Length: 601
Image (tube, rainbow, N blue to C red; front, top):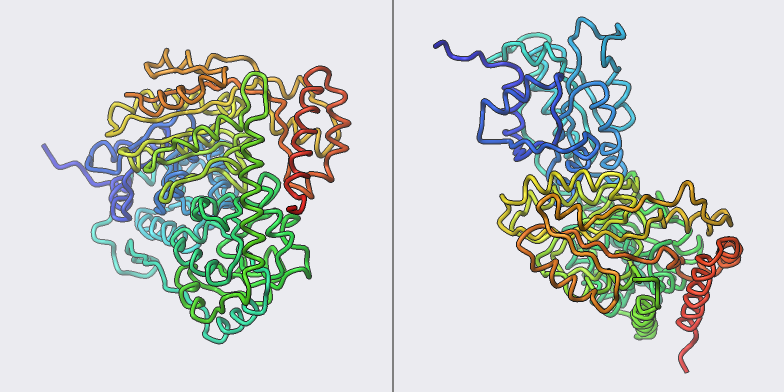
């Protein structure tokens, strides 16, 4: 039998392997059938992971990039499949992670003819990606793929390669001819070493040394710089706050770690950022600018690998373009210790008071469970080798405020885009990358009904291949889109609009059992600890359905939260018995906040 002809589709698979791609997330369709055939023929990787929906496949690729630091790859057909990718691609764009989408397209001869599933993919992906190109010839394919991977890695942004079906079927050129009109390319990229100039480091040190109340705001750019961040904070006697994306890279067990900043952050972070006179921003582009120090309050220095971010959120005096770890290493010898420990003492006191407040908040009686207590009980028993995925919604607040991550435990979420339904796709990607580590996903019932219920089917089809079968999905079941309900109260002064906010009841734990997984339903605080213990020691994936109270307030830390109280009270007054319960909880939280800020003695 004659040897099968090598096609452009085969070249694509070979190029993915050359770039180190271990798995491709996606869904099948006629627009990529030739590439799928090449994946089947070649064997030995990349593996193909079938999601239930192309949006979820794209979110899996984003999750892979966040947990591993590698390029996440998603494969999709044309038309509706390609359109479904946009949510994941924008998630990658706004959170700055490298993703490459390989997308099918109709034959070149019918482009622009309103053919079935005919969509102008160049235009569709133009804003969502750093680089998008349609492959027009066999000789074009290697260069476009290499350019997409290099651009994704260099810019930490998503890129797209569009492959018309007839191009996939062309014979692959071997070797690539060296002639006019052909660009020869290779799969090669290395991380650069980027350091600021010595004079810039000295200017930055002068600003930081002049301060008496220094603070750090740490983002995801500190991924490889945890030790250097802590060394600088210790040297300066600084309080440390983080963005949501920066939370996993700071040890929140330390006495000067004030936790996540912003609307869903901690009261300690509000104290640190509200009272500091010097700010060092490390690898963060957090958009919650109203929670930064007031302009003119603090002199500021910023470290970022992307020079476009320097001065982007706060009026800094010195911007240091560079890798966070190496820049802080170079900056450290230039920094002076504080003349006294007064500010450090203030920070430690604020952090201690926040921990007391968080414990009090979680202990407030609710009907039936306080969601803050659910996450706090997890924090007490989260395995030291776990990975965590977090969805968008009220679960994000409780993660930010209550979950203390052991060093080395990664937790990721759709932060800047804030796309609901990401916890399961992210969690699956994390588990496939590290199948020997337990995974805990935190999600609200709104996010589960959006994407999570479907992707539990994917979990049911994969888990038997995992070295460690523990995959715990905690569903905060309150039958309400709680974050939006509280946003309506806080921002609009409106009561809950049931038609938009109420969710259909759904038996999450029983559904898990139907899939051959384990389901645990808990609605009594006395059973919560045992439920977590059972879920975290199970021999298969578990859905832990925690029936929680939608009326537990999402109160921002003071002073911002205090400014919202009247509007929230007015809205709750219109909400009947549930609103009265929410109002009682809100008033108790406000009392606790004021008590927290009362000077000692």
